[in-house]
Image (cartoon, rainbow, N blue to C red; front, side):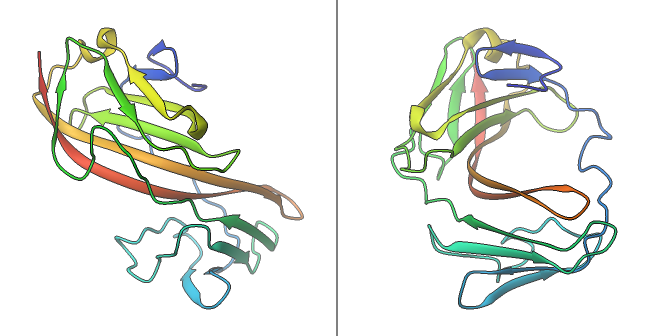
Length: 196
């Protein structure tokens, strides 16, 4: 997992995210329109390029839909990118649709039914709340499983937190003056209880 500044074990990183971490300063690419081939799902205004179905209920799509992202141009030149929406998760174990118990003295194995997409990634993360270290792993979707090792979980000090699994589809494209990355996620989140 490139970019790990904490403890790296296999595909997993345990560390603290600085309180000022977050999105980098975003340059203007003008208004960005997201369509699914039949309708406009959202128009993102300059300076506010991160959107979710939680913040914008119209920003939903079917698995496999070809999402077209078009920017009118600004500091960053105009661009268009098309990315396939990730499939829904199936076969996730432990299920992320209800709270899960994580035993910090044992490995946590998370599995799913892989999608058929060759470049999909899966990100699995566990948090302990604000300002506490977290664990995160990134693997190829085709692996169908990831293990967060007990050596990492044993460093957790909180008794509750959050677990998230994300299927990530991405596309790189070029504007006249920039390399653009477009990322689309399918996310499942649940609460966790940490016990020895």
